[in-house]
Length: 112
Length: 112
DNA sequence: GTAATATACAACCAAATGGTTGTATATGAG
DNA sequence: CTCATATACAACCATTTGGTTGTATATTAC
Image (tube, rainbow over all chains, first blue to last red; front, side):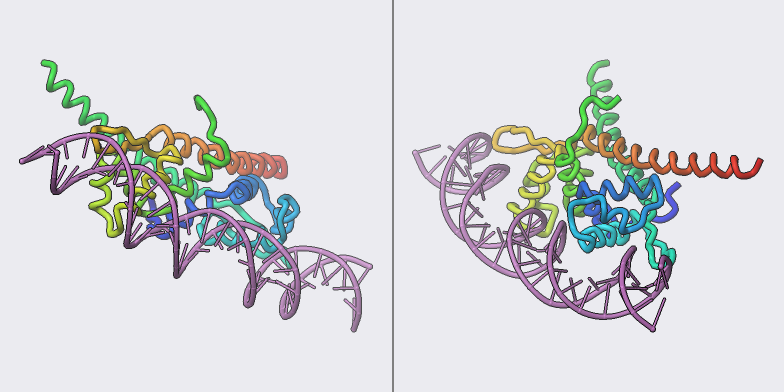
């Protein structure tokens, strides 16, 4: 079902990018609507350049893309990357289920 | 379905903790089997203290817990925290779906 | 054409991160 | 009891991160 895997370094970038409340807010907003970089910059109590850096971090992680529209840049959230991360976490949950299943099998074997 | 929410600061810690290949490996191993801190330390090309710090970061994030067994510490992965993160990402995907639905509705309205 | 707007990017700085070594403490083995 | 093992934790250091300001460039408005 997974089309292409994310490299370890890409995974690092994605989680790193999500480890900041401002960047998570940017992801939420850009998934939900078309937003310009300056719309984002107006929303947070920091400089335009700081917001630009946050967007750049998200872009490097594949969580948003920017498209030019005249002098403006439209930032769009990338649901595919979110889905990739969820799939990765699902694989982790499966490891836990394996462990539980082995334990169940062991207990069943112990109590005939 | 969610019992209690993670605070923004907790979410930061969880994503931060997952943004490192060694820590992700520790999470996978501890979800799947019982592992001592020294088992982990033997696996990675870094000092015992460095691995200890990684485990501490994961513990602060709620991704693992440590229980004492004599002088040993058993590290266990916490699937609930993984599930919380997945739910959070699902909420993000829902924002995107809302956007798509609005777009569909608009297009349907435009073509009678 | 000129002025205003939107973005890009470099240089700088404080704080956080991720590693190290060294020392201390608690438990198990013999 | 003594020695080895398992862990904890402090102090230190280089690099990265997350912010700043300042300057440059491209596009739109008038």
